[in-house]
Image 1 (cartoon, helix red, strand yellow):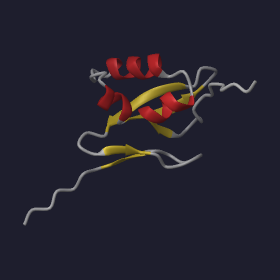
Image 2 (cartoon, one colour):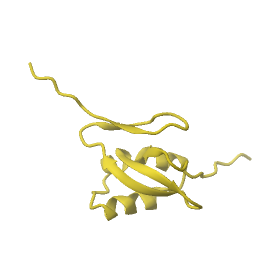
Image 3 (cartoon, rainbow, N blue to C red):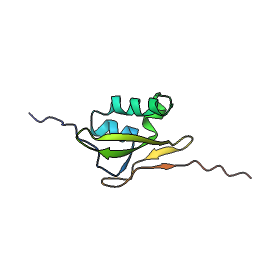
Length: 91
């Protein structure tokens, strides 16, 4: 019977919170990293925050920024995730 195994983030890359939750057991680390920086831990902040993978045995992460009015975008495999900002044009 196949099983899904959790994996760690790749050292040196940035990850969206939603990406971390999809690759491993990161919920507690994501919540703690947000709390440590005084950020809310609602679903928008979890999904659209950007984290740096410091690595190590536990795949340690560090909060980088919240994508705010934009969205955290996956850069793809072995590529950094990033914030896409919303641009408002005035007429």
